[in-house]
Image 1 (cartoon, rainbow, N blue to C red):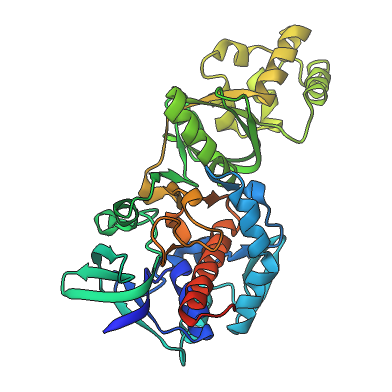
Image 2 (cartoon, rainbow, N blue to C red):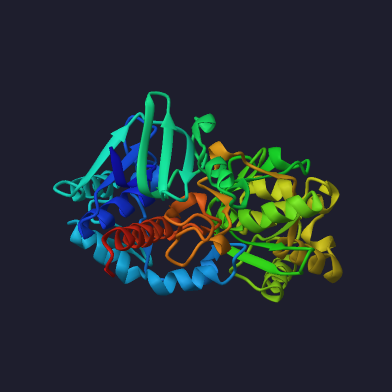
Length: 417
């Protein structure tokens, strides 16, 4: 049997493509290597599934094709994602700009998609790991081989994902398959992941959670990236949403320079002048003049973080307030507002939420059809685009799947949808 459309991967983008193509009347077969579809979706948003964002913008995405995010968002807006899920019977709940299912359970999103294909000319076969795909361009026919046999189809969507957050790395082949068709695929590297460092004081701050501004300045172009939020400090490095948001440019900097320089504003609620004035006021107070600087700072920072800051200059931390000169107070204020940290690596793929890199988008149309192999499409994580935390990556998964599914169905049916 020759299928009109086969979709490789029953993840977020694959199921969005299947629903879209099926609603248009195109028969589709979805192949999934795992024993159940949408397994990874259940882990998103700590099991709550932040599935889009009210403030989607192109600058929340990274891609070598710098113009693609803006073009994509013209084709698939937040309103389009909300409409797609409302039609599936899933209603949103808002936490600021973050959008969740009203149930606050990722399982609801999974069930909405699986129920959405019922009654459509769409079937899912799990436990099928596609090992190789070939194409007879003259016959416009794709052949997909797996351990138990093969399938053939007229149109093919690769939505096979990446190894992010998955132990079974050997089973991933989407990047290899696209390369076999002549596509350039940027190496897949972890993103939205913790940053690692060995600065000699990590044991002091281990276990601390603290609200900071975190900045990264790239040497290559001088561009500064800045994020604010709760940082989790550990003995092997740093994590938390602001760190995850910086992990893509940090990873690029690590590849170019071997290390990345991060700066912490440990007291973002006060300007450097305001912090100096507060410390100077305490210095001149008869109640604090005899206290050590490190003890005075407990009114500003967790004690373990203070130990880390002064770990390489304990003498300064032990000075009494009254003995500090104005210059020394200025130095301390500056250090707390710009505490340096050397990053030497990123967490591995198992710890990452997404991967940066993937198939070069310049080799695909804006409807995500290959410019090299007609009838071949790609969607989701395997494409060279990744976003920040906050629903951006799932927004791209739905949108890319919908665009690819719609385009494949239009080609099969010979009409615009």
